[in-house]
Image (cartoon, rainbow, N blue to C red; front, side, top):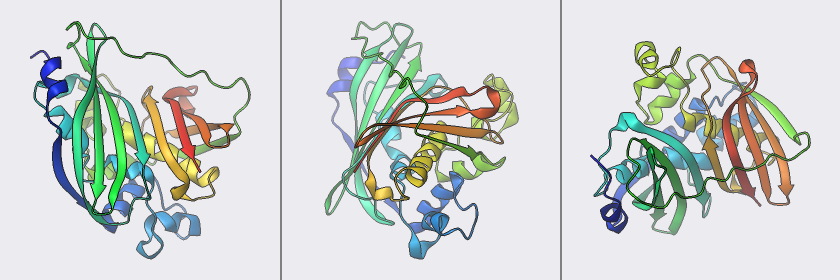
Length: 285
């Protein structure tokens, strides 16, 4: 069914209550590859409840990612999930995410672009608790076959990479079972676990979740550039540029743009640095 752009953009935001505790945070971090070496003090900040801090990208799975689910169920949006591709993801943190909490997640269709052969849904989610705003996230979802409704085309610019070597380069191995662990945080798409389903989708084997790569790259930046301090991250935005497979190596390159901004890319090292994440920027204190 075609998207009704007028109805979708005029719809009232949808709110739901979400909650999480230290076990959800620890599971998420383990799904990103944290905990190696298991007794390393820097890794214990991701895995041990008495030392735990929360990587800001946890916002994408808190409450099982209800923000995106809420946006896809908005009035005027009736799409085939098999036609949906995650295009971009951003998170802005208003204060450090607590190790456990309850909050209200409010989602809406913030914009809708017509790319001709596809529509792009811009889904915005604001999360607040009793103390005020916690984070704001935004996802752009490509819906194949739903374009041509006469809407605005939207932005399409790409970021140029600095014409110099990166200031930091780090390789992050992806364990063979990592997608199986990451999906326990709420993304049950069989594309990341079932070889037969992956082949039907055109992949040689199950692929890693894009949001897992997203979190892995941010962890690399926090660990290697920001002194291991997750509270220094103010915002994080990326474009999903390609896939990476469990068992491969995620290569993260980071350039300092100025005193508060970092640009990064992530590639699949074993496949001639095939693009995985692009147009990625971390702002920080």
